[in-house]
Structure formats: structure tokens, C-alpha cells
Image 1 (cartoon, rainbow, N blue to C red):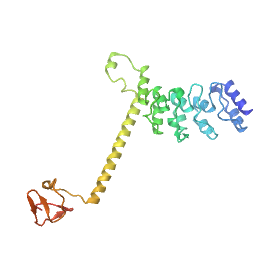
Image 2: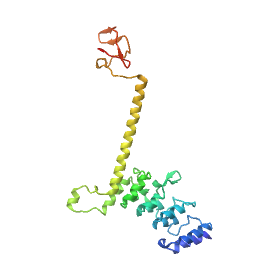
Image 3: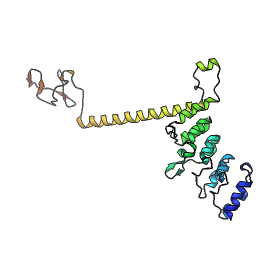
Image 4: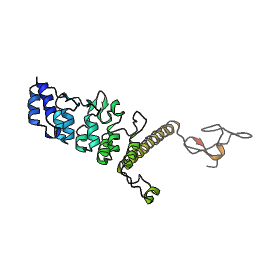
Length: 253
């Protein structure tokens, strides 16, 4: 009964004029918070469209399905990303859906586009920045193999000037979403390089500690290593006593 009343409320009231007091009353009576109208819009989607992040946080206190989509395949987070409602996006931070972070959740009905792709497509730099902070994967691809960087360029189709002087210039240099994703990708690449170099240096230092490796005399390159005493040299053997440095025999020291 309560579910039917909530569905009627979502159907008769437009999203912009939804009475949250009646919604709260119905939820207290046991109505399902995931109830949707004929178009598939839920209370969570209504809160996103109305740009009410506090309502989103409040609805999450109930057993709400963050992965639920409307008839067109849009989840609440995808709607927030496309509308550029950054504060609503922030309300989804730290939430996971069946082991998958909500920030990367997608759906086949929308071609597996992620929220980051959606914000990039609609040229919403603040939302792109927030999603990247939340850990959105900018290298994920949709069903056609296109990533968020591609969609940031696609946003220029309707916004790029077509004057001859602009055509000759970098048409994408002023696109903030493109810049954000590109810089984020370069930062990840540099972080991976730093991590690799750190690992290599750590292994080298460990090798030095184990072998007490020092400076090898150029004349001994390719010679058999002899820490003290005899040294194998070209043309025979030399028994002259040698002082050593860090375990290596060094001539003329």
C-alpha cells in the first residue's frame, strides 16, 4: 500500500515539485525507497535532478539501490555526472556497488559509459575533477572502445569555433576536461615510473649490501673476481700482495 502511494507520488508530482515531507512519511510507513515511476525514476534520481546532496545522504540511510537505472539506462550517479552536479557526485564518495566502486559503475543500456565519460561529454570540468579525486578510472572504455579522453574531445563538436585561425591552432588546448584527464593520466604515468625506479634502486641497494660491491678498476673489467691475494691477469699470474678497497683488489693503491 505504501509503495503504491509512493509510486503515485512520483507519477503525479513532477520531480521539481516533489514533496519530501510526504516521501519521508511514506518511508516511515515501510515504503520501498527504490520504488520507481513508469519512466524508472526513483527518489534518488529525483534528489540528483533537484541538486539536493543532503537528500542523497539522507536516502542512503535506507536500503537504497545505487545501481538502479531508469528506463533509458541512467543511474543516479550518471545523471549527476551529466548534469554537472558536483556536490551530488561527492555524496556518492566511498560507496561501492557489488564490489565495484560506484564512481566507475556503468550500464549496457548507455553503452557502458562511466560517470567520468558522461561529465567529459557534457563538458563539466568540476565534475570531472571530483570524479578523478574519487578515483575514477580514466582508462576504462565503453562498448565501442572509447575512453573519457575521447569523450572530452567529442564535447568540442558543438563548442569549437570554426574560424580559419582557430582551425590552424590546437582546437583542444582550451578544453578544461581534456586538460584535466590528460594531466591526470600523465601524473599516473609519472607515478608508475617513480614506483619502478624506487623498486629498482631498492633492489640495487640490497644487492650492494649483500655483495659489498665497490669500484672496479677498469683494468680488471672482465677478469675473475679475487677479493685478496692472487689475481688472474692476461699472460699469467701475479702473487704480489694487494691492498683492497670494499673487497675488490685495486692495483696501484
